[in-house]
Image (cartoon, rainbow, N blue to C red):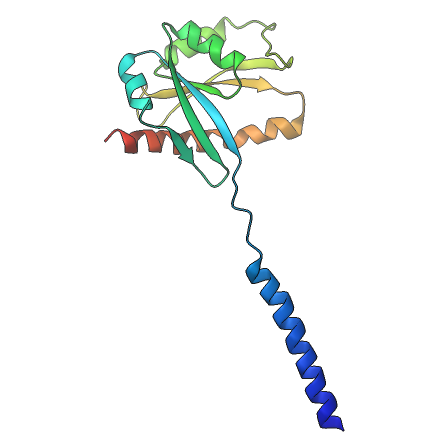
Length: 166
């Protein structure tokens, strides 16, 4: 009688194990990544041509679809990245960013009334190939803390840019 109970318990435990582990194996992990449309504003036609080769960049966090627009001046780059939160400028010199930030007043806000702290410049090769992005105060520490990894993101995008333009 004890043997039958032990066999029944082992059988039930085996069925439960197969059910739970089998269910985990069959259930597919959600592989859909969020997508973001990122606009890169350039100043020169050669930069525009190079960026047009980079259609999308995939990272662990998401998929970034790249749209490239050429503008005539650094001021246009600045106004466009301020107006469009998912935008960056490329090819603007660091001196121009410093000049803009020095003349920055307290009244510049985006459409959601986030105050502009300044334009950030960072480069991964030389001063002529740097990104400029608008740095806003979102009024919440939680939202502001999400900006910490932006340089890592742009480094990945820049590496993709360099890879496509070898």
